[in-house]
Length: 239
Image (cartoon, rainbow, N blue to C red; front, side):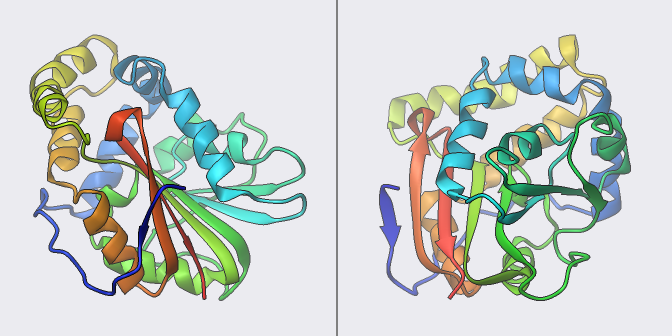
């Protein structure tokens, strides 16, 4: 993958906006109708390659059962469900699940901190651009370890910190100024993207997130930067 976390030391995470689960669910209900289009525009079309990289990092084999948490409209789940992989979309926003109802993957409503699955019931778990919206990300990471079988894989695809300092400054300005403006033109609920921009800015960087994943009980934690660190893929193994 790239960088690896071998120490048990947990770095402090930057504080993010308060997240009340019902408020976040309602927010995503409000953006569901044009969510996929908005993501493509805001990412400059990079969302397609990010989904492909996430599937490749997971490395699921034919017959594997994979849970896609915070799956939204299940675009990411369809990407995972290739080559005989049984991928299940899970999201706590009913609006998101309805918006993706036509996609040919099974769907289940569920909270990342209390998944409706039995212990050790899936071979792998993916969460893309959703962990930072969970009220307690550390509790969610522990819950993921509960439902993944020993030896199974976790992949977290999330916005992160650009590795080149000058670009990191420009990117932060884009998040807080340009992103909400673009969202007003394409999103069904542009005000929600102000919250999303703030949540990205407040999210821990790559080493800090790796430390939190390890502290939640995962092993062999490593990460790979995508698009200069705008996005990072963290992968870990269930011991």
